[in-house]
Length: 337
Image 1: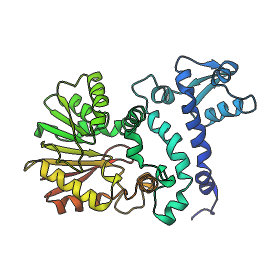
Image 2: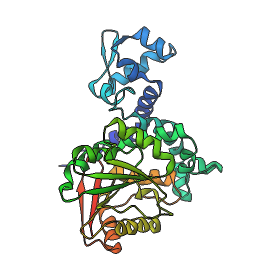
Image 3: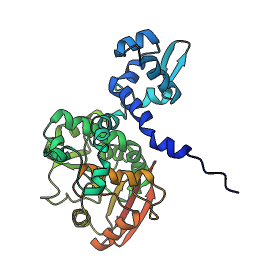
Image 4: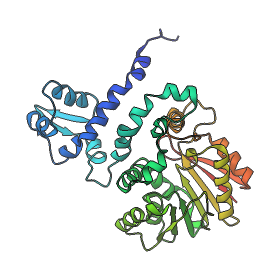
């Protein structure tokens, strides 16, 4: 027998931005990085962060109640999760994407209703400014921060791809839209026989080269500068696109899939991964909301189901396709030529 309806889930979701902004402000202030050195007393910590007396206790205790801080007597410390993932000085830091969410997405999502009614982006484009990518690539510091954010959100899936795909059957790969190069680096680390290429715009080159050198795989990875709108994708046994296709409208998606088909030999593979929506469009809520984020950020981008992506691959000429889950909301779609 079904229980009586309650408003609990409605209220939790409707006011979820309370908890979200509390966490994002803590990251913005560097709270978890400060506490990575050890727990601090309330007075010392609130003073170091410059918190006003009216709000400081509520703010820190809210983070305790949310599970992001631990408190013993009057001392506050990180939890194991926040210490590992939200300390800016650790290579495991994933806060880059959350810093971007705080600075960009949080205010832009305030205009979601307008986006839903107009179909138009609500970022800098809304006030007559350049689009997302023009804005990012015009500022080297902001570009580096954005690419680090992409690494943060993709790292778990990158490691899974590096270990779960049958790489023993291949010798070369190209990572299209490589960003910092984490996907390429994780593949190289897990598969010493492979050689790979990171393909992206020229502005990305120094960021890629610094990153792969730090992970000590620069001897097997090289950067190829190029624009996939104007040039062909470099030839390789496997072509990968992570968090790329959803940025673009349908004709552009199909164009990129066809370029991937052209780039691989017979028996070669094409791997697409991002927040693939389940075919029933009823389970992967994050993937569906990521598609709404593409509405906010791009003129024509949208996320899609595994079946849709398989259809585009088959239309381009790939003979066998499959969908495999990765981590969280991410899946990969694989096409074999």
